[in-house]
Structures are given as structure tokens and as C-alpha cells.
Length: 246
Image (cartoon, rainbow, N blue to C red):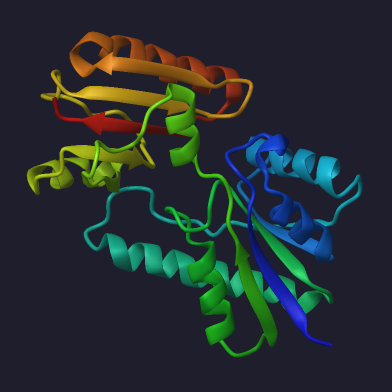
């Protein structure tokens, strides 16, 4: 009998923002793998709450200890991330080989945007020890939720949009991008962008959601305060913003 791995986008957080297709996928597998970030991981608790609502109490979730990686900015960033992914693939492979049945990976937002679960599953299969079929189920991303909460379109009529990370923001601006969605922010670094317009959101779709918008120079203090407040209340902060040149 063919085993399956299903990479399932579960939306930005709340259980009611998951698609019907994703719910069907959750119910089709026998157990789930997630990364174990350590004791008291609020994102693990959120996954368990989502499964309790859509699959039922007692769903089997195997939390695989997340390999350590250098959180500094190494000289060869790509090599450091690749090593981390290789270690994750090895750990996930062990978990899959230790259990029978179909397995689901729960991915925040949509697996297509700044998440490496697809890459890691590919690495597991390339190792040649796991014989499975696999598929990917899309989810509602934080990009979509940001636009909905602020009641905006992410790009001007007929114009392009760049999607980048906080660490690559300046590089994107220097290359001429003037309409950017920025994700994966360890901090907000907006110096010199006072006349740009920002639409910002943190922990979107959760009880701790916060929104700020306006010219950067006018709202930068509010942004810092809101980000700190979210982190204090939730124990974590995951923010995304649209930045547009006037």
C-alpha cells in the first residue's frame, strides 16, 4: 500500500482560516510531524488546537527536535541554511521510518512563501530510504491576510510587487523596487524611509493581532511599541508589511 506525505498549508493561525481542502487532507493522514522548538512552544500548541478542532482530540503529533543552527549572519548564509535543512531532513526521515501510515506536515500560511518544508521533504526523498508519494495543499498566507486586514491591494494598477525578507530589504530597494512585501523580520530597520508608506501587521489572525499603517516617519514609534507589545503578550512575534515608495 502506497504511503503518503502531505504538506498542508494551515493558514496564518486561527482554525477558521484553513481551507476545506486542507481539512480533508488533515483527516486523510494518520499522524503529523512538527519541529520541536523547545518547552512551551506556542506554535506547537496552536497546531494542536487546530487539529483538535478539525480532526479531533488525540491526534498523533510527533515533535522532532529542531536541529541547532547559527542564528548569526554567517559568512556563507546559504551554506549554513543548507546544512540546517540537511539535519532536519535526516531527523524527519528517522521519524517517518519509525512509524507506519501516512504523515502530514503542518505549514503556517502557504508552503510556497518563505517556508522550507517542501525543500526538506524533497531532501528526505533524495536520500532514497523513504518510499512515498507526496503532495502539497495550499493555504491562506500572511500576505493575503495583511491585504485583507488593511483593505488594500498589494500592488498598484498593472505594477509589479517584490516579496523579500527583512535582511534583504535594502538590497531590494537599491535594485529599484518601490513596492515590497517584507517577511521574516528579526527587527524593523526603516531608517531613511520616512516618506514611504507602510501597512504592517503582526500575529495576524490571532488574539494578539496588531495593525499599523501610515507614513513611516509618522508611525515608526507606534510600530516599535506595537511589535514589543505583541511579543510580550503572545511570547512570539511574526510580522509582515507592505512598503511603498510615494
